Image (cartoon, rainbow, N blue to C red; front, top):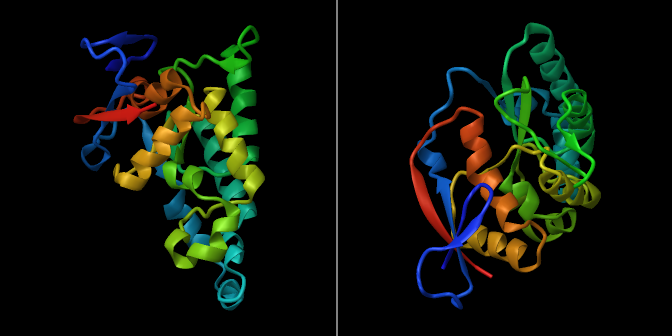
Length: 233
């Protein structure tokens, strides 16, 4: 088995051919917020913008759920939070974003801080420094726009699953290292299988996955209990 650390992967036993990676990740049911970072859950603020007038349309066109908690409202919330964090110099972490416009704003800020490395076309962010950092939710990576037809209320998350190109963009952000963290409450069988597939299909590289499930979390100043996660590849 091979254990994946922040910047290296090493064999930890003699089973060199078992095709398993070992990750250490936080038990997010027992995570501890940092006193130095203001934590904002986009869900809490977006609920206040709920468009009840669309709920009847959702019964016929479930993908309209995305407009019940609209991209426009989410972007307005994010922009306000971003500008407040910068103007007040308050270190802020926003959990559960879904829009490329949000990360475009974030990446411009990180470029100004000289975190972009042209040689690898990625951001090498020291998350102890920037005033704003963000998370995506694993659920918004797992599901697609087309899944609304099959799963309806089972995937009526807040913020919602966005259009397919927005979901695709989130993978880009994770792999460009501008997303600090993939937020997840629990690792059930479906979540584990999804993470395994991302490794097998090389959608997310092992070192990147270790950062967004563990090490960036530490750099943000959070603490908590760790659990071990074995991923087949």
